[in-house]
Length: 395
Image (cartoon, rainbow, N blue to C red; front, side, top):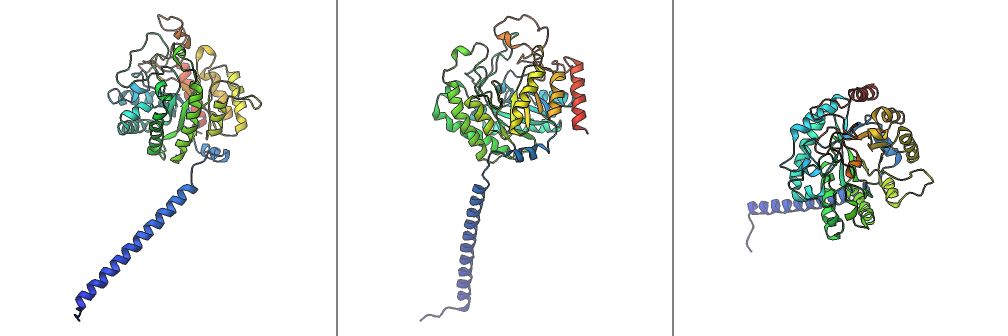
């Protein structure tokens, strides 16, 4: 019988010990993975309770800002596409906003941007967030939007239709995608990957998952909207909230109501009920009088959650900074008006410019705060915004 040398025996023992150690490490790694998986299930993101939502809000400033699309972009595609992304203008215009006390912007994304170039989109979002953060501005990103042109296309965007309000804005998803359930997995990927990429980014105020989901109005688009659009959006909106929560974002999710009776005993439309029940914080739109605005705030108080008005300010309607902001301050409602700088979206023109012909600037601007050169449209407005913002946020 052949003897095994001491050296060989030692080598065998070392090999056995190493193998044992590797098996132990693998088992430990497996156990850790199992623990992490169980923890992830336990920590699954739920709709924020009113306590959680109010705790979050207690650490926020009073949000006052604007829906932002740089003056050089006609729509959200032109804002974000590689060839037309304009950080210089974004920096300049957000600087003007900062100078009057604004600390928040609501900014639209689009599913086609992700489909075309996800990493490029994320890189440009990062550049935008860096600029906004430099100006002490947080951003509420909008993922989907039911308003205006139902046939969006990437590439060079159309020129503005002269004197027409928001003549180049586009829906997301477009009508063809909305009707094609085989494309919903792409929309799911867009929602999940976008939020997951930025889910712990403190520069982000939150995620507005769908703007005015049941909107069927716009410049001459009513005739080509599909009859079952609201039904399709309703079903998809429910999924969007589920997709968004599945990646456990630290920021709140919301979708703002914009029409209808929101009072306690009113028969709320199913899609509005879904929006309110699924939102971590309450957001809404109001372009009416100060009295109507205050009435709406009181209707929504029953949810006992933080409120942000994510669209307001239409001067001819009576919706003004001087009329709305003191009420919002009284009830601690965040305020994000439509429009910052006059530009290609042309929202200084009123909604009736879709049907009425304008040949010159309207007698009173509908939206927007600044001229394209940065001078205020109404200096008394910007002074008022700066004053009331300072009173609340610089205590």
